[in-house]
Amino acid sequence: MTPDELARQAVKVVAKVERSTLARIFALLKVVEDDALGLSDMLATLDSTRARVFKELRAREVLAAARAARELLQLGAESGSIAPVLREGIEAVYRAGVEEAIKAATATGLVTNVEAARAIIFGSGIDLEFVSALTRITLTQLRKVGEAGRDRLEEALVRGAVRGEGPRAAARLVRAAVDVPRHEAERITRTVFNRANNEARKIAFDDPALAVEYLQWNATNDVRTCPICAARHGLVWRRDQAPIATVHPHDRCVLLPWNPATPEARRGDDYYRRTRAELARQIPDGKQASPTTPGPFEVSDGITVPPPAWTPEGGWSHGR
Image (cartoon, rainbow, N blue to C red; front, side, top):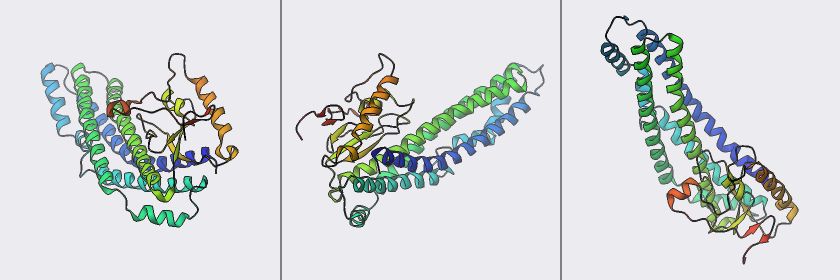
């Protein structure tokens, strides 16, 4: 299996769990949207002679008792419908990360006894404390999204009621208000699943059972690849110095074990030289980054990125 295939397989595993969780969140937000559209129709029938202040109070009163507001506010609740799905999803991508790490090490010839390696790594147990902490953090973020979404929904309904706007205008306001939490929930969910997957891979690569000394950065090669990930694509770091993938929201990068003893053709050196050149061409002038340019998450964590040990174009840049 080529490095490109290994990287794509890892991303695919995360995407499958991610889609399942997002489907639940989007279904919840569809309920919110439909309910809010019904409220906007009802508020549009308010007597046009009523005072503006009465219309505003009535709109806020109706929303306070509405299912729409409750569903949004419960988006990140520990006891909400999303909580168990999110927890299961994070644990699933964590387990998948360990399994994919073993497959990748096997493909590079670093592991010969796969079952023994699997038994050793899984025998140490899933880091449930990490999974629980990540779940709590994510639910807190989703709760804030729900609260902000409720405020936007209230603003949309109040504006519609006060201005006496027609159903179409009110519907546009409602949909725009619900789109914000939908987009934010998607960003948070995708980022947390990729982070859990990459954290599990790192823990597995650190285990002596896999005998990994070097890690290679793999970016998804398309028009959405950011300058930071494009600059790191195909570069190799010593395992103890390698940056952790997931350096920004929606990051799709993964780290793969790299074996200097593997022949160039099997390592995919030509593939990395070609795709690095393609990515470089698509980055606009002035937007280029270096391999040591920190991503947003690295900046917030105060992480300094060391230079790579090996590059497809230049080989070893410093001692092995």
